[in-house]
Length: 46
Image: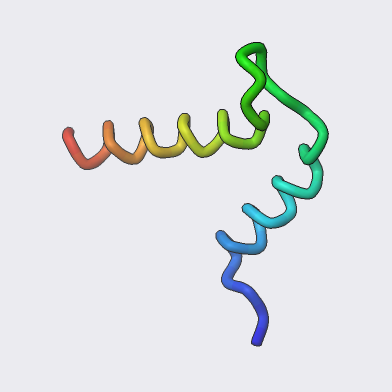
C-alpha cells in the first residue's frame, strides 16, 4: 500500500535533510514541522 502524500513528503524531507541541523543542533527538518504546526494552529484559531 503506498503512503499517503503527506507521509511521503515527510519521508522525503527527512531523507533529504538527514545531515542538516539548525543553529541549536536540532535536525533541520524539525523546523519545517514546527512552522507547519504554528500555521495550522493559526488557521484553527482564526
